[in-house]
Length: 278
Image (tube, rainbow, N blue to C red; front, side, top):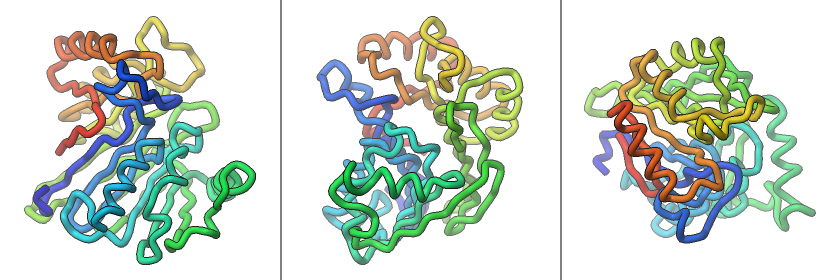
């Protein structure tokens, strides 16, 4: 990657739990994780099982996709459901004493995460990690600066709550960039209007396309690709990236959905693990 530009990479595109069978691997079997490299920095959105692969890549040569040594990692967590944090104990930079890791999440997430990662649920906890780890608790609606980026937040409509993120910044070549990470959010009229404003004119809208219209269940906190298309159009977002696929949706089924969605809107992208965007 040219270090002057942003690059988004998909490390986990599945929802609920990982799938390792061959019929799930075209679109990806790991759970939610996306990395954004920009200049010498890296921001990671969610820490599902996909973050393990990202951690191995970082640990092998001490570098990220930007081709610049990375000593600080920022991880933005949407919420603490297992499919969004289960990869954290396997993230190798935690075991590197020269790395600084910043974790962001909703109020109270530090206490909950420290309970989950450590005995008796896992053999080691945060106190055992060699890296310097910092926790930053947020209230949805807060905006903050992050190493030259601006991060805005919005409350998602999901059981137990979720945080949606918008990242805005400027690449070294002067290009204005933005993305919105909107997984685990159920849409209704009020939420859709808020999302349209939140995602206004973004370059990439990463969308929870967890269910088809037929499978969607009210109160589960997820959406459909059709709802993502509607928000993209209203928000005038350049592209919408579908992900967080139902763990039961096989590759052949997702391919049919993708073909249908692209006929409806040419700005649709169906995420696949290893895909690079921006």
